[in-house]
Amino acid sequence: MSGKRRSFESGHRPKFMVVIDQTPECARAVHFASRRTARTGASLVMLAVVDPPDNFEWIGVGEAMIEEASEEAQKRLDAAAREARSAAGVEPEQAIRVGNRADEIIKLINEDEDISFLVLAAGSGKEGPGPLVSTLAGKAAASFPVPIVIVPGSLSDEEIDALAG
Image (cartoon, rainbow, N blue to C red; front, side):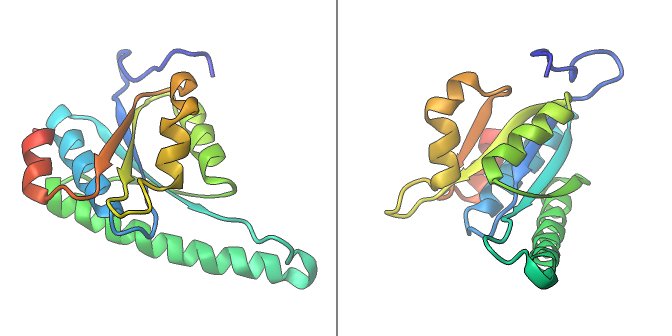
């Protein structure tokens, strides 16, 4: 990556990227990103990352596991896209990647220089905000290529609407 985002150059629009997973708080991040996208005239990218199987590379089992996990990820992306359309009339781009979640997020941001903000949901349970939020908002935050927006999982739609504009 060149270190410069292109989202504000002529012919480019900033993009919000939200990571879609199976946590209940994910809907909060989708709602916030959708509302901000609509409010600012930006675009929305939804990313689901499939974990690669550990030791099932033999006899095609690993490929079958990835395919099954990708189908589940697509279902989550479709549900999140419906939420984005319902919440703010936004039609998101969708991407599925296979690999380490943090690595795949950074790769997509580096590939798409219009991505200007990463939106993550923070868990509201006693376990903490979640491993992805902890990883990216910790030491990695200082060197991350775009601002990270962390949406508390305990916010209501009304509170998010008021905050997102």
